[in-house]
Image (cartoon, rainbow, N blue to C red; front, top):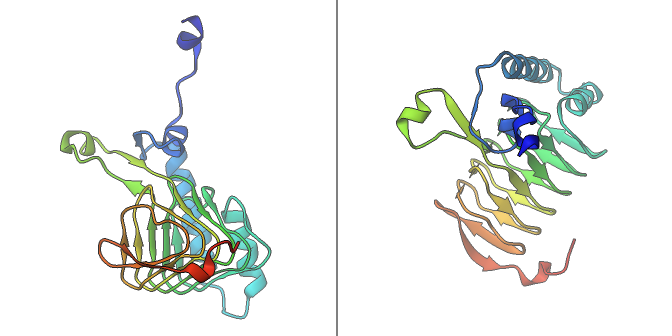
Amino acid sequence: MEETKNKPEKSEKQKMIDEELYYSGVRELQSLLQKSKEMCLDYNNLRPKEIEKKKEILKKLFKKTGKEFYIESPFYCDYGFNTTIGEKFYANHNLVILDVCEVTFGDNVFIGPNVGIYTAAHPINVEIRNKGLEFGKKIKIGNNVWIGGSVCICPGVTIGDNVTIGAGSVVTKDIPSNVTAFGNPCKIYKVNEENIGKK
């Protein structure tokens, strides 16, 4: 009982990372947001041939990266420090990652243009929402995943290994490994038996 009393209150940043209600207007989070937006601005204003400079920015921005990766400009994210990308990661133009919570990509992930990956959410209860409180849910994307153009991946979704998500899909629920899925809402179209067991 005594331990609970003396336990320090969580920061809004920690509440955010822990998928709890938090207030994003605090100075710490606003400062981190501004830092991330400035880094995205720097990234997006580099010339296409300045590949190494682009990689250096993303290495500083993200929690972790593989050795081989590339994101076409423009690219936008909220914080960056909650995002991990694996080896041989490629994303086309206009990728948006709202990473108030962890976003994790495995190896060999290919992402089409105009894709949105959103951990951020707002309460349905209007009284709570109007107080400026929000929350997030982690997103995890496995190995060997191809995400088509204009896909929206919603908070809390996990996508397994060896998955293809068709263009224009809205992914609201988990997608298991070794399938092709598409639609709004995104549903499994077929099982890709040739991919079972591949890593």
